[in-house]
Length: 278
Ligand code: NAP
Image (cartoon, rainbow, N blue to C red; front, side):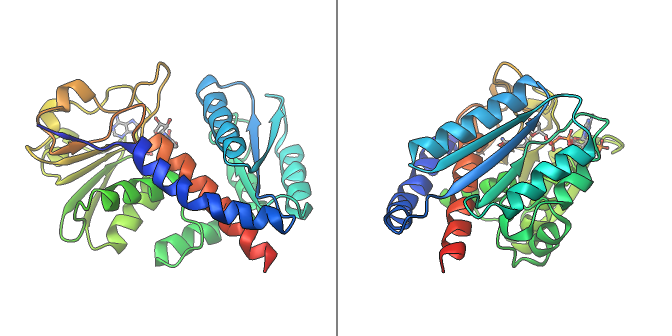
């Protein structure tokens, strides 16, 4: 039987610990505020942004939602980010990835000031994560590590196979697992014999963006499977049913990595608000 890694309860514990910190800040007149920027109308991104805003409000934080037209230019987006950088009532800025293709996403990420980079997307934020001393590592990678820790699943010495190498997910989670002394293999769309590599993993992280991509037959008996994917219809990147019973432990979708990602984002925003309040 696989252990179901219940992200909802891990997230609930993180949020519980934030309640008193938010109360203390609010008493001093500081309401932790997360600004989210969505460009365009991608339904999955809209769901992410809505969930993040709702989670903020439920905890008594402020959520500032900025929804820009699909035709927004890089310059216009950068200008919106600059204004948020200068707004002292905003503590964290999250630009929802991916942005439409005509926008230079890297330039937009770089415009976020490091103090407000609560999702670790800037070059400096990424580098700090790579060195292992970042203030705000990217939230989904941090959530994956938090789930492993919450269930006391060992990382050191394990072979972790990460499928995906995006700058906000695959790469940072690989580095975080490496910093925790896993032996890490990073796979991507040009990887040969992917299924054989995954079959050798003690820990599998799926960050592909393709529904039910990871097959049950790719999973070694007892391996830990973390599904970061979220596709339309609340479907992950792992064929969950096929992996159940083979994996030693597995995250479901929904209620796996997603809620812990959101809780981590709230935590980083509260951290940032406290630093401003010093
Ligand atoms: P992304 O930027 O599109 O990156 C996808 C990665 O998958 C790329 O590195 C790509 O390789 C690799 N890939 C694509 N096809 C592949 C194949 N056939 N074999 C092996 N690798 C392949 O996606 P992302 O932003 O990292 O997101 C990945 C997934 O996580 C999505 O489902 C997204 O919705 C989800 N996500 C979840 C959360 C959460 O809170 N749970 C947060 C963020 C993202 P190349 O580099 O070679 O193109």
